[in-house]
Length: 246
Image (cartoon, rainbow, N blue to C red; front, side, top):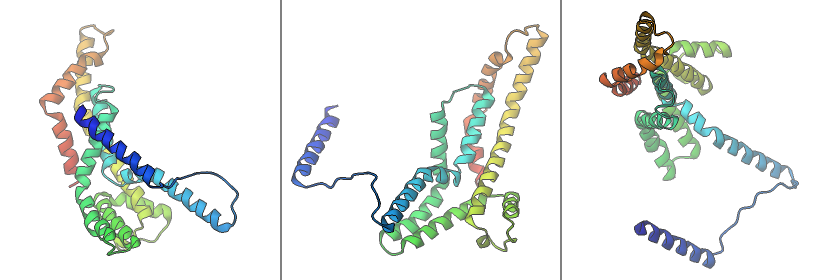
């Protein structure tokens, strides 16, 4: 504890001394009457940037492997009937780390071709953004299904594209999300089947024994947990998720 507290106190003292020696700038927020159209435009730009930053995490999650992973893990928990076990924090945390693992090639490409050259002032901000979007588009194109793309193209009443470059990102993203939802529900159905069989067998046995007042889920839950442990269920689920992105 002392090893942690002493460096922390020293850092605070150094910061306090620096603050006294140097006049630090202050930030003030307020609402006042605009002196001209330029100030109104600047305020609208700031509001727009703050709005984008608030929804940026959701946009990033929806364009990665997170959607499929978190839905499948949720189906696993519901199929076993363990209610809040594992907790939501564990499910989301595991989904995030698996997403980072799957997206690591894309992240490395963005870092190599866009972020590092931009930080070295070798490319402009627009070029870095274009390279980042291109890397994400290639990942989404590798996972999106043709039916979903065709559906969005028909809805927008656009001409049939001849190449991937002709498909806009505004069409690709919702088509990718629909593909992820479709595949995730298909995998969830396959996960539900063995647990549903166990529930049916336990319910039939209880009815034949005349124990109709005893809820079947109480008896079937230990058997479902035993089956999941014997077949090494987490490895099977995670392995299937990893292979589905191949």
